[in-house]
Amino acid sequence: MKKLFGQYAGLRREMYIIFFGRVVTNMGALIWPMLTLILKSKMGLSASDSSNLLLLLGVLQLPCTMIGGKLADRFSKRSIIIVCDLVTVGCYLVCSLLPISYLFVALFFVAGIFAQMEWPSYDALVADMSSSADRERAYSLNYLGANLGLVLAPTLGGLLFAQHLNLAFLINAVSTFCSTVLIFFFIRDTRPTQDASPVSHYEAEHQGSTWQVLRRGKVLWLFLICSAVGEAVYSQFNFLLPLNMEQLYGQQGAVWFGMLTSVNATVVILCTPLLTARFGRLRDTAKLLAGEVFIALGFGFYIFVQGFIPLYFVAMVVFTLGEIFTTLGRQPYLTRRIPASHRGRLTSITLVGGMLCQGVALKVGGALADGTPLLLVWGLVVAVAAAVAAGYALLRRADRRAFPLLYK
Image (cartoon, rainbow, N blue to C red; front, side):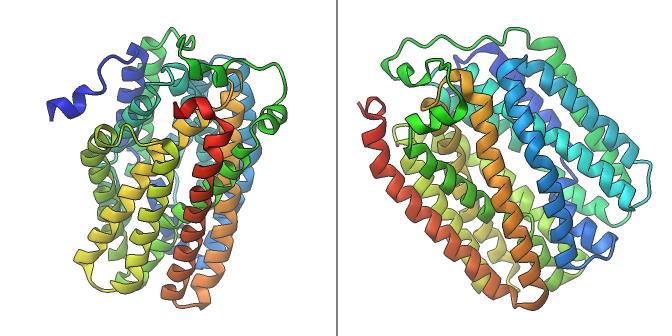
């Protein structure tokens, strides 16, 4: 165990502050996994109407994410995170005092928009704080911190869902504010890490536009497409799965879904250090391919295990292994192949592509869930995941030719 966690030693001090901030923030992440159930059970909306509202949130987040990426490359990433967090905290506090209504949902959406705006800054800051060689360890530590906070949060959210939903919003507000305080007082030096390795050639600052950077590395388009469609597949974890649980178990479905989400976080905590150490030499393209294969297998389980609760947890373990591999591959892949001067903007493009595909998936999934057996919908999700895996297989071959220094 000491050896597994010892692999995170030697990173910049600021990385550990970001890690603790992630832990504290996600200790209060009780609400977002329950959003589909809030709209359907608390407000009485159909699956289609719920997906329309989630789609609206995605549409509102698109320009704000692009703005967030632009700001991340021009201003202090630390300041952007602090400002966005304070707006989010304010919205959560007001939500904790309101009854469930469309005003309640509107404030919830404002909180989500500002939380999304800060993501390009967070991701770019992790890349700035690490060298190319340390990139997997840095993102692995960040991801581990996020999930350490999530271990009990979804289960607690499921227990509070029926009678004490407002308390969950209050806990979210307090935890996010504590994370903001950590960043405000302990992160001062945000200058990018100096990297003298040959592969840093790909990360050298570039004076051109974002589109010029993408034209220079055309293989990045294949990555962006696969990443975006992969996000659409992943989004069914928070949309189709809770609907499936509610269909089978009614309001008790929120409790089972919360437990599944906690299992997801627990597996991340136990396996992320192990997979980071064991597969440290595996290329990021191979990790992306392995991740999508496991996600397809994990979701495929739900076609066959309806009504067998223990097997839901087996499926969740398989799915989570895919999530870990994908996380260990995605941001290291992108940040090693783009100029440091464009990290915020290209991260925002990755996020926006994923959000667009998630929006389409929610719209289609919501329409199908209202009138189609969920087993058929799960089958469609698995088919799309298999197509993404095929795309990553093509990326592995093309990437070696486009970025040869990364393969020496």
